[in-house]
Length: 196
Image 1 (tube, rainbow, N blue to C red):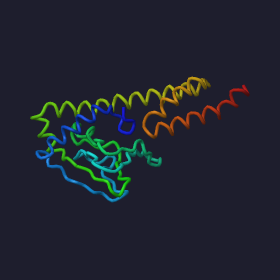
Image 2 (cartoon, helix red, strand yellow):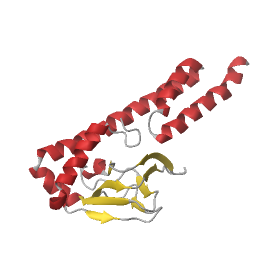
Image 3 (cartoon, rainbow, N blue to C red):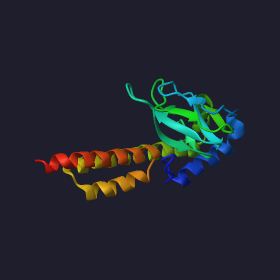
Image 4 (spheres, rainbow, N blue to C red):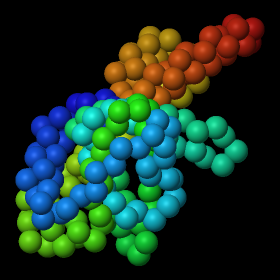
């Protein structure tokens, strides 16, 4: 699995290949954003899919009352924005995507053009759904690990927490931060347990 994109590499590669194969038909817009430019804004209506050609992007989530968190950094070959393209009504993006490098190049495929293409290309539709389902499955796995980590911390089980934190550190960037926070909570809770 590519920890930055949370998608298994062969799956992501197939979708990239299909998008590149249909590039003439899909007529994507070539973007060369400035460093720091926002390409997708969280909660905005999803109108496109991005394919990173060169450079690095940060994927960030912001919850009300909290600072934005970088949940991943992605590079060349990453496909972003596909999860929101096939929702009901006016699907919205679940994260902000920002350019980290000055030399970033991205192909932006419009929602309308992609919808027309998947009507005639079942393989493209299947690959887009596969990438989305893999991301959901991997997100569920990370959520389960976090819940297991909270449980191990609550029980004071340092051994179980160490295993969980090692697994979290092999996931997306923000999971390493979560592992460190769980370990800190365990050390802070240990003196209270001993004083009982």
